[in-house]
Image (cartoon, rainbow, N blue to C red; front, side):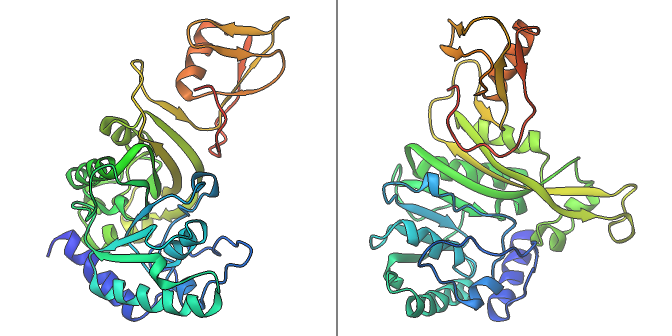
Length: 322
């Protein structure tokens, strides 16, 4: 049995019998006015973070959600995209598609603004998305791509890039590892299916996105997720996994590399405002300017005395140098 077959079997069982916190830390769902989430959806909240970021859902976009789960994030996306068929949910597991459809019917009873037809549930997987090229504004996935082995991850990211419109956004929430996960854990199919052994380091995760061609990446959140201890996982030292929420934009890749925003700011400490003639960055004395990591590194080298670079907050939400 391959790791993908193990994963499908695991989630087919979870669709029939909800398992709270099956693989991920079960957190209360985001609350919005007039949005009521059925209890069964909350029990089937199989994700390590959230891909529902209101700032990326303006203008009632078309959203393609990969891995419908219990339907909770499909419902939340529909809250912002209130036109029929604007939310497309794709899942390869028949039992999960059926469970999500039932849950959305329940949601319609408690939300007068929602009709189940608002969410189109399709059979399919991340490697062959059942939509045409450049047809959606947002692709989202929560705690799925970390399961994939490197070649499959590459295939999935290429597919997301294909279906996104120019300027579209890939919103992801995945576990990452604070150091490389040992090979014996990576090869454990059940641990991989449980989102515990397939995680990449932050650096490798971002590099995969840049290699596909995403020109701008923004980190929305980074927080502790799970600790793999020495007793249960045969490790020499405990290994911390973190949850990373990110938004990657299908914009041209700059010649000097992608702009990755992690919450750094640059503050000019000189006597007057400073203008970076090459890139057009205007630093006003004493006022923080959000900058990507690339610009932060450049300023640190060029102006070590005049520009203060703050640490990454890992909670960046737009409005920066690029």
